[in-house]
Every structure is written in C-alpha cells, then in structure tokens.
Length: 293
Image 1 (cartoon, helix red, strand yellow):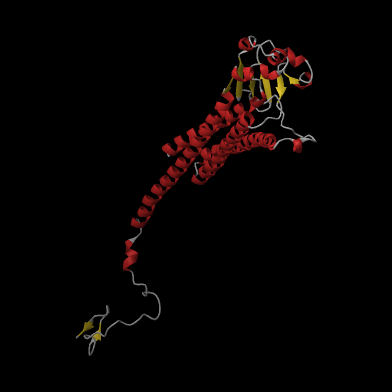
Image 2: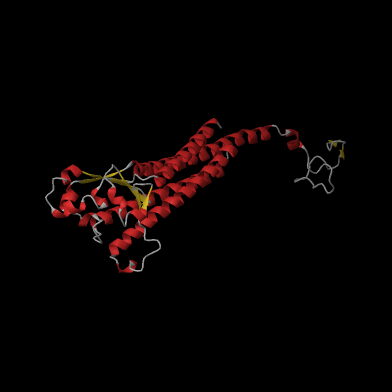
C-alpha cells in the first residue's frame, strides 16, 4: 500500500497548506491596494482637491483587508482628527464598516449599498465556514492516513472539497461586493463614483497578496480532495487484489476427498438405484453389491 500511503501523505499535507493559506488570507489586510499619486494631486488646481487631499482618507495610499483599512506613509495626520481618531486601531488603521448592528437609517440607504453590505458579510461568513471545514478535513485526513481506510479517505475528500467550495464562494462574494462598490454605489464621497476626477485618475487599484492567497488556498484544497479520492480508490483496489489470491488458495487447499464420499453412507433410507440391475435377478448379491452366479 505504498502508493496509497504516498497519496494520503500528500493529501494531508496539501490540506494543512490550504488551511494555512486561507487563514492567512482571512486575517491579513492586503486584499485591495489603493496607490494614490499624491505628487500629481499636488499639481491639481481644483479647490476641492486642495482642501481635501490632506484631511480625507481616500486621498492617501492604503491597503484594505476584511476588517480594516491601513494607511501608508507619514502623511496620515488626518487620523488624529475626528471622526477618524475614535475609530483608529494600530496607529494607522481604521475599522471597515459592516453596519453591524444595522443603524436606524440602514433601510433608507440605496439598494446597491445594502446589497454590497450583504455581500461583504457573506464573504466573511463563507470564509469562516471554509476554515471550519478545512480544519475538520485535516483531522479526518490524519485519521484516514493512520487507519488507511478507503471510507475514511472518501469522507476526508468530501469535507475538504466542501471547504474549497466555500472558499471559492467567499471569493465570488468578494468580487460581487467590489464590483458594486466601484460601479454602482453613490452613497457618499468614500466611493469611487463620487471622487473628484483628479483623484480618480491618479488612483491605481490592485489586488494584494491576501487576495491571491485566498485563491491559492482554494486551489490547493481542491487538489487535496482529489488526492484523497485517488488514495481511497488505491486502497480499495489493493484490498480487492489481496482478497482474490486468498479465495483462490482457500478453494485449492480444500480436501478433494470429500467430493467422492457417499452422502448417504451413514444415513438411513438409502435411495434405490435409478434403474433396475439386470444382473441381479436370480443371483446372489455379493459383499460389495456385485451379483454372483
């Protein structure tokens, strides 16, 4: 069972790596990166840009995670003013608002804004569920590697595949929320559609390494599920191959003398011959049943 053991070992290793990548993606703040060219904004003649570029967060380069947005560089004095100072964490980060609990005016906001919030919540919820299933998959996979049972390996494959599916679904929710944020929501000036044209032109948005880790963790989880299925099939085939020679040996080793024994030798009521013995008439049957004349 060396081949199945190797597949099980690789499967459990990939499951642990998948869990690590998804957990690291979930807990870090580099899902989205906004790079603002402030030197170009300094040359803007717009009075709005001149008055807002040093006091509003969206005029600064930043990277955003699932729970907070962190600002880079030393030009972050706006964080020391209200309302940002009361929301600040780790010196240069702000909490990301999920509207939990929902404010009184939540239902008065636009449908696009509410849909974005719901998609963001689903993103977080699905990733948490994915982490749970991947953790269970690690435990079941380790047990399957120890016992080397086909059924346990199949269970591990199903659990890890569910974890990979929830990860992919969470990533899909993230893309949906991001699309609505960039192209639909006009709730206030924090959203790109309401930015000044100079700010919009000089801001570059890109995906960060936390986002990439999420997709990589999902792919590795799917691969580990496939490896569990292959290991399960190999274990089943190995057991089947070991059973066939055993059955053949047991059949060949049976004492063939029993095939020639008379089943009615010791029992009463021995049935008569199927036909009449033409030589027995008028003769004396011998000791062995032969007719003597």
